[in-house]
Image (tube, rainbow, N blue to C red; front, side, top):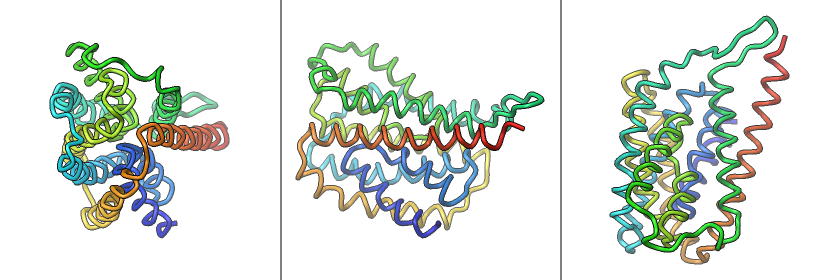
Length: 268
């Protein structure tokens, strides 16, 4: 199983570089199901993996002028602050067993993964929607909307331990009207900052297996270098739709697995 996990982590970087997101969508299930990590450790490691790969990707995108700096700052700074507080304060305060009755027990792992899956499914519907329904005209969105969206996104991504690309991309597409490839570059910049902020919060709360983490991060980074080839070959609409279907498929997989796990093993 671990061999499959190492291979899959290479594709995490490939997806990040090509689609601007999807890294956390895959890395969290990979770390939980293939490496048997607990959910909080998996989300912490996912933040570091995705943050490092996204940083490399954003540097590459900046060289091709596919980053909108102002959008990244207006959206990213509020998101950065919120994700740090969420990972450092809110996540550690959630008990391991959220709800227990005589016949039912609901754990932190199940709650986070089900929220993760539902969020992915909702976002995927927006990504797969016709292009005209997704986009807003440029300059139509106020700075206040961007700040509020950044705060909400920071809380959600901090809660599920994701870099947030699968949330940030549809939000930026709708609020800014920027081309998909520019949104990808801007999202990678935001993800890198947010992920490292979230991971910093985890460093103070748990021990980190640095040799293992650096190896799997290196695999993801190697994938992002190859992603540039695929980005040049595909159009904006093709990338957006492919990303949407990936999010939907993964969300359904995680939801079905966790619901089956909960009802099959938790009820007594």
